[in-house]
Length: 73
Image 1 (cartoon, rainbow, N blue to C red):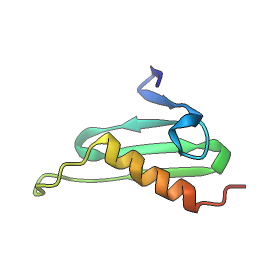
Image 2 (image 1 turned 90 degrees about the vertical axis):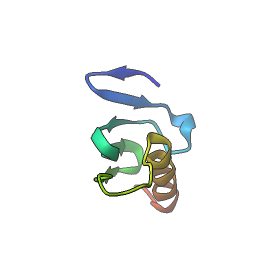
Image 3 (image 1 turned 90 degrees about the horizontal axis):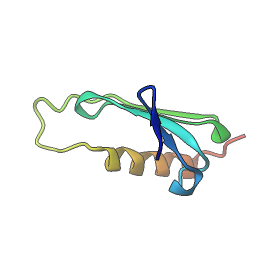
Image 4 (image 1 turned 135 degrees about the vertical axis):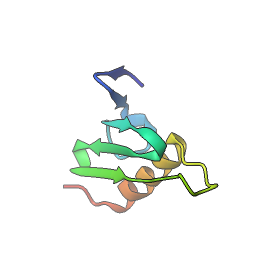
């Protein structure tokens, strides 16, 4: 995955339904855009009081599930 201007480039072979880009923020906050699916997924989170660890792999697992269920255009 390439990185630039605070965005990660997502290649089409990640199983997300197409190529895209994502930004990963503080405490589990993240956003992913898959243009070919006309899909934007945003995750807001505050792990301050939680023992559950949120990381990028959890977020991309969620994006894969949403992309698979989303019909696209």
